[in-house]
Image (cartoon, rainbow, N blue to C red; front, top):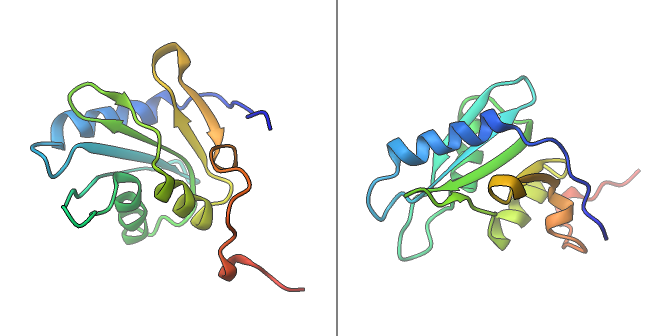
Amino acid sequence: MTARHHPVDHELVQAATHVAETRCRGDQHTVAAAARVRDGRIVTAVNVYHFTGGPCAELALIGAAAAQGAYELDTIVAVGDRGRGVVPPCGRCRQVLLDYFPGIEVIVGTGDRARTVLITDLLPESYVWADQLTTD
């Protein structure tokens, strides 16, 4: 399977970078995420680290977006603090993003290697959540 690349939303990367630089302080918040809503808005969030496995920035963002009435996310990116740049989503986040937004695009890679791919390209042959199945 060959991933199809789409243009990188640099404004989204800049938004996540800004949040990582200004809001990620200490060990509890080390990654920021930004997502573009279908209506053009940008929603941001940070991870909530906890030894029990608190939510990643992408998962915190899904909740923050819902709280703002944003249920249709088009593109998402995560950026690490301390200048680490774009961070790809972990396996759990890939699955949740696929389940909630099967058409979402994800920005991965840094610098000249930054690219935008579909979530299905990051999680091929994935599990299909039973609640997503529809019957005609």
